[in-house]
Length: 368
Ligand code: ATP
Ligand code: MG
Image 1 (cartoon, protein in one colour):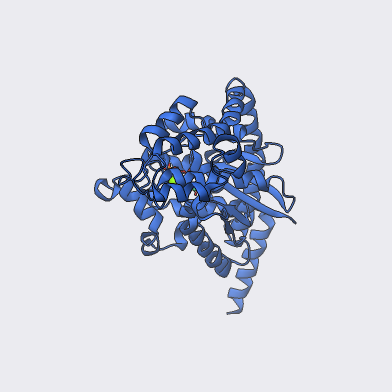
Image 2: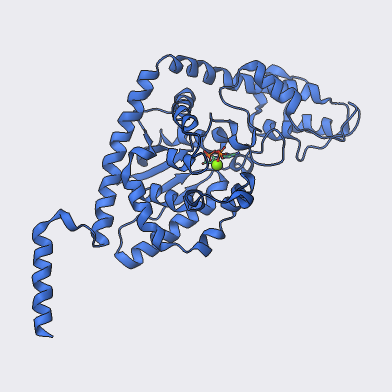
C-alpha cells in the first residue's frame, strides 16, 4: 500500500507566500509522486473556530478562499481530496477519545501553542478550552486519515510530536491500530518558516505581515516598497548594507534565479554578486525592491489569473470540495470503526458478539 498524506490549512484568510513555500509547493511536487496513493487536504474550519468562535462568517468565506488559492496554485482535485473538517464527524469523535490520553501538563509544554496564545492575548483574556486542546484535535485529524506523512511548516513540529505520542500511547493500550505519522518539511531553512514583511516573526494571517498569493500587482508593489523591512542603518546608497534580517534578500534567496538576473538585472550574474555590492555600499534599497517586485509579480501573475478564472466558477469549487469530503468521510469512518472496536465501545456493531461475551462472563463467574 502507498503512503498517505494529510495536510491542511485553517480557513482564517487567503493563502500567503509563507503557505506557498512552506506547504503548497511541496503539495504540488507530491501530487506527481506515485509513492503517495492518497492525498487529503483538510480545510480545518473547526480548528479555525477555536480562536474565531464569534466570527463564523469569516470561516465560511475562507473555506472558499482557500480552495480558490489551492486551485490557482495548481493543486489537482483529481489527484488529491480537498475536504472540510466539520463535515467529518469521525475527527471529533477521535478527538474525544484522545483527550483522555494527554495530560494538561503536556499541553502546557507546547511552544507553538504558548506563542499563539500570547499573540492572541489569551494569556490575559482567558483561554478557550478548544484552542488549548487543538493539538489533540490535530492528532485526531492526522490519525483518522492513517497519514504516514504530514507536509507542514516548522511551526507544526510540536503538533506532530504530540500526535506521535498519542499514537504510541493508544497503540500501547488498545493494540496496534493507529499509524505513526512523520513530518515532511521543505528542504530550504527559510521556507520552513518564512518571516513576514516586518521581519519580526513568521508570515502569518493573524499578524497582518503577509503577502497574499492573490494580492494584485499594485498591492504587492505597495507592500514591498513601503512596508518591507530592510536594513535601518542603510540610509544613503553608499552606506554599507546588511543582508541578515533584510527581508528583500530573504525573499530573493527563495525566489530569485540566475535567469531573473539575466532578464531583469543583467549587471549582476547572480544573487551573490548583488549581495556583495549591497554589503560594500553603492546599491540602493529601491533598486533591490524593484527587482524583487518584478520577480514576485512574475511568479504571482499566473496564480492570480487562474484564481480569477475559478472565482467565476464557484459552483465547480463547491462540487470539488463536496466530492473530496465524501471520499474523506469513508476513509475517516473506517478508522473510527477500528478505533471503537479496539477500545471495546463498538456496542451496536454486532448483537451476537456482545451476547456471546455476556454468556462467557456468566460462565466464568459461575466457575469462580
Ligand atoms: P493563522 O495565523 O490563522 O494560524 P497561518 O498563517 O499560521 O494562519 P495556518 O493555516 O496555521 O496559517 O498554516 C497552514 C500551513 O502553512 C501549516 O503547514 C503551516 O506550517 C504553514 N505555514 C504557515 N505560515 C508559514 C510560514 N510563514 N512559513 C512556512 N510555512 C508556513
Ligand atoms: Mg497557524
